[in-house]
Length: 430
Image (cartoon, rainbow, N blue to C red; front, side, top):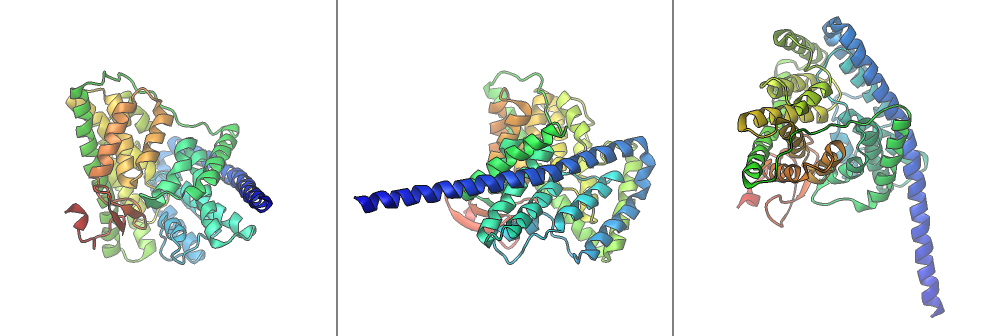
């Protein structure tokens, strides 16, 4: 009896010690990543304001691209994998997240936004957070498996600090790495680092995003059917978004094999497109246009222009990320859908934004949580409908080719395939 009691006491002691360790590491990661991400958000805000005051900065985009390529070459990076490097590290494919990634992606994203590249910020934040989390793990001599948890913890902290959605940020890294299986061992570090980083950023004056949906209609069969249709369209559009990015990459690699020439060519193409459009609304992240879409008024073609400019920017070697451009595309398309089909454009913009994000990331739970944090709970039924439809019908495409989809979207079936794997034999569809 005494031996049984001692055994249980040892288990309790081990559990408490492990929990205390991860609480400490999560707090440390949250503060470190929160500070770095707050500085990142502050700099992004300043360069965006500066570009607004001096629009001629756009003409320096090709030069900025050369600087970005040079910075990566000086760090020994010849072929940047972006966010995919994080996934390969967590999957244990002999890939590490280097310490220099955080300052490197910081500087490259600031340059991209200063000179008007069409890119997001959360993708860069994820890479920064992963780099810092991995570096902290190395400093404390954590073994490889536990460092992976700190990588995800850093990603949660960065996403939370930059975008201001701690609930979604806590879940997003665990969900995006392996679709169908969540690394619940990362739950405590991800949750606490997300909350700590968010509070740090708020206290530093980095206010979270928040939007108000107008004109939410009664939940009827007809309105639900319209939102189902919106979910179907967003699923298709998410595939198109991914194909735009892939197609732009193939275009550049075919015609501009030298990285410096590719960056210059991409910069000139973005300049030319901006001059043809006649507005700077599609440069940078585009959060102002997202807000306009949720208010119910954006040009009908806005979603197409953003996809094109984002593909031309990122495939050329500029940095930032695809998440906010995906939000932009979904919100502006949703607004158009609402006007065409006679249902609240504001609701459809918010719903389309989340449905498209779900389609390109394959992360329905994180998409739902982002919806709750950004828009509240009043439009929840519509948001849930669109996200679920988009998740199923977007197939196995995605922004991140190293993302592993463990279980089928259509059957309770183990498939274990990479997102966008063209060699997939299609048996899942039988």
